[in-house]
Image 1 (cartoon, rainbow, N blue to C red):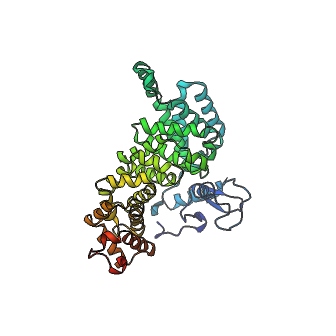
Image 2 (image 1 turned 135 degrees about the vertical axis):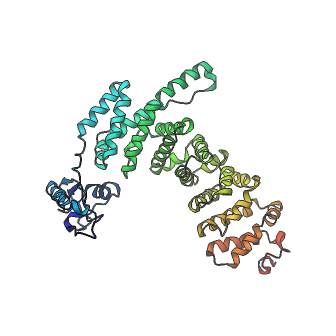
Image 3 (image 1 turned 90 degrees about the vertical axis):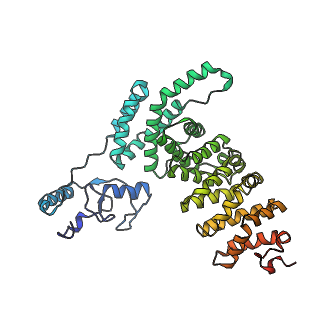
Length: 421
């Protein structure tokens, strides 16, 4: 379009440089496309005007109806050049409508699904609606619904009949729970600081999300629950991170095993990377079967970023004796780690060598040294010393060889200066 006719520059959003469909003016007097400036202010948390760099004294967005009508008229006049008329944007939802829907859903359980469907439709229309919904208390309402409908795990001693009744009741609640979860996910993604979602009963909500991971067969619900958990744990204090229950790690490992999607796998790996350094979380993750699961996934993984994340998790897990033992007990543990050296990236090589270093330093028996020779680990480490690698990676490789100098003294792969007494 721009190749045939010249677009008036004041029709273009200063951020995207595209024709505006819903122009709004901020306190500095500059006009932007609503979606772009909302993303700038409310999602990126910027407090300056993109054009003037002035500090914003307020976040009110005033619709520029005059400019919008000029743009629409210009589009109509240039329709013969293929310019499409920009439709009049829908006005943002009124906060009172959101409050009424929340009140109806709270007072009448049989109306919950209907109200949630309407809230979901409103949320999907614009980022402005998401902000209005958040300010109207939608986040707290949805959190309470998830808590109320997620139920709790039944104990074996309660008997088969009671467990069956509870499971049937939980199954009947699933549509409400899944709908509430999907809307809360939309609101969480749209807000950069969703702290009040989880204040107060954060522990209970986290446990509810873990239960959703445990029993939901809905792919989207598991992904939504995983993303919300990450937001919660991003804001958690050290005491909360240390006191996480083992069940959380069991469900994260199960997501890795299920391989429901690349996004879900990366989400679970990110959480493990975030949580493992705290307290006994490494041991909890190892006891959940994370080491064997990650080694199995590494065998066939070709995604660079995912391989790097798996090696980072393995590196953290091998900082504890339980993790190193599980790696050595896995038939392909040492072999798959060694295979990834020099095949993924500098980060991947560094983490793989660090894993081997921890094993050699803290669990380096004569059997381990012999296994490394037979599996080609020693040859790979010698190669690391000879080619262009990160300095830290070379230092770790050199240390590993020195640690096993006695066992590898006669190997042709080892530089003599490293095993000399």
